Image 1 (cartoon, one colour):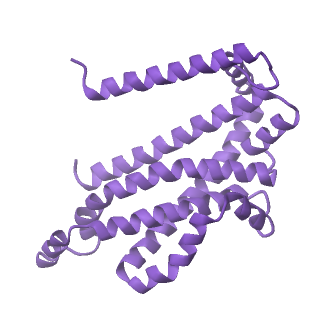
Image 2 (image 1 turned 90 degrees about the vertical axis):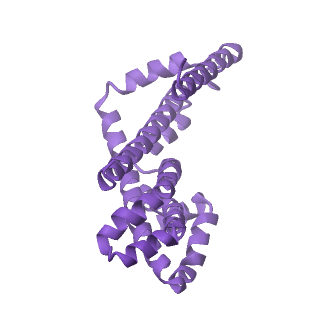
Image 3 (image 1 turned 135 degrees about the vertical axis):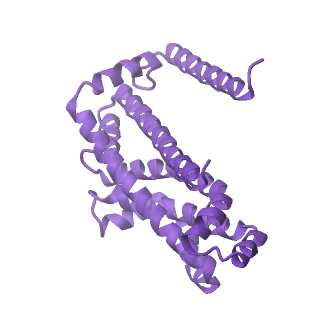
Length: 253
């Protein structure tokens, strides 16, 4: 009998293959290269792209910018989440800003940011703005969800400081941090690339998408979109891997 994990993997693989079949069928039925490119055409276009030096420079440019914004947001949101947990008034003070970053459209932030940070650092700023409320909310929720009995136990046995965080807080907060990373990684790439497109950030993936649209190169448009999907998934897996590694080390598992 197959385990549930293998069954889920086969189901997901079958779903992906079915989606590719539908995509290829649509391309064959429409037969308009200016409207849709089939998976084989996209794969061929991607193969052509990865043979160029410019492809890797473009990927590095976007990856570094979006990753930096994500890291800055994670660090600051974690610190402020802890402070908000300790001091309720600080949580109340931050509430309107967190609500604003959740509610304001990405395009509005991009246009405002262009006036101050320029197109070069736009992906860093926008990914930071979009990721911050997700991480902050989950970190704060994780602190608040810690079992009060465990905290009383730590107090009785004199467990303080880093040891208290390592053995009490972190294990209890793991699921909240995990959910935050899973959600924020995808948002960071969506928002970051959108910022690159609107801001016309040179040597970026967003700019390549804009060029593809400008010159009606649907194959390149689909190929770069596939690159974004793969990078986003890879980035998410990397974040989860790091978190799990830290968790195993911290909790001796």
